[in-house]
Length: 139
Image 1 (spheres, rainbow, N blue to C red):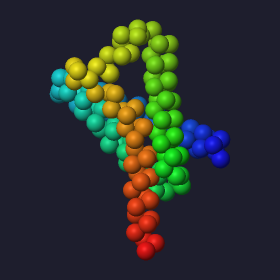
Image 2: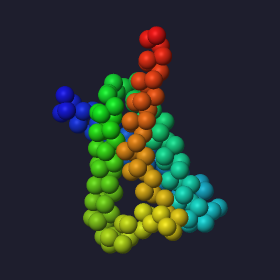
Image 3: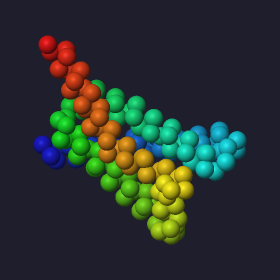
């Protein structure tokens, strides 16, 4: 069963990469020229949280029947995959550790840390919502 969660989780994670790329493309082509760098970063982060939220909600309601414990596992799995991909791709492209950590400096208004936090929590939150909805239907 655990191996099945790994497989399903990995398959469900790949579209998130494309969502993040599309979000970054939208940022660069549409609103980056109208806002300051910090505002662009913050808007892009929040829009990705929204997009990922819609996708994860859909997954939890339509595609993945998981327990609360499995939802927590999925969240940490997705956050780990995301961080591994982000730091590996950054490192391979020649970025320094300081450059890679720049968007995680929340004290400077850089809120990218909310992405892995959201990935950790969203599956569990939407799973809990489904459990409550299902309980109310069964009564």
